Length: 357
Image 1 (spheres, rainbow, N blue to C red):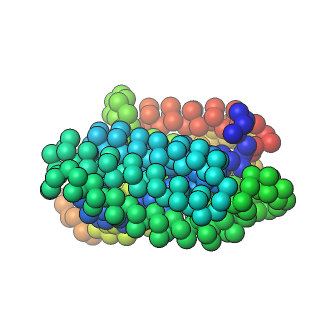
Image 2: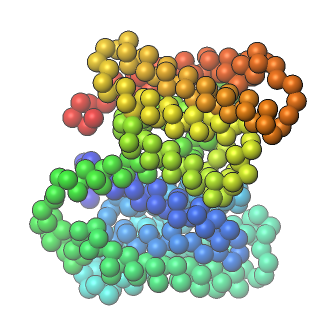
């Protein structure tokens, strides 16, 4: 693997990491526990094809395990097992040229490492239900089902979809790249990256004055300005839909009943902010206009959120409304952190080279 990482490889890594997280969280009840089934483990076959899938799988597994409830042991041991297995798969794949031999080494390492690592996590957390070696066999069998069946589909059929020949690296290099397809792949990768960062940033609270802040609005502002209105709306829309169908991507979980939470209006405000910043930022040439666009995008989040809360208060929750207290609680106290986030977004957007933009 060369020292330089191409834009295409970076985009592909973002797609793989995002797919791992989404595939895991969509089947959340089956992803964790003694009886688990991770559809996302089918992606562990990809180090046979792409070197960049090794760190991508690690990042995807790390993000997934943060939501899993297994605590620090799962985050450290489970994610490390995925990383080591991916490294072994990649190295073994470079040595073996036979197609079926490649497939065997592609499935054997994820099965072995997870079979021994996951029961160890149960032991550390005190959640084991049987002897260690029994759980090794159970987890190994479950992993074999995920990797062999679905990973086999990825291995034997997916490379055509990815425009990849699996026999030799020279064959892959000889393929002509279609710029239009690359740009589509790049857009897909950035949309997936936006969704993944929205999920992660929703769960992280950063100490600040006068109140702690999350970075989710900064993610929305940055990618709305960077991607434009269409792609940022797709990313935020997919995020909202995932949360409403029960995937725990919101700050306090997920599910359709989330629409009755006062904070849901601010999530809907992300859609309006994406539209505002996506339409105006790239048309703004002067720095002052760019700053005003970021400010308008931030304000639109609060306008939608506060209007939604007031509507919920009037038509569902009931009780008296203290408008100034609502402004203080839901907006004014967050102004210092919003100024900081908008400033950081502005600086980062200015530093992105023109050819990448």
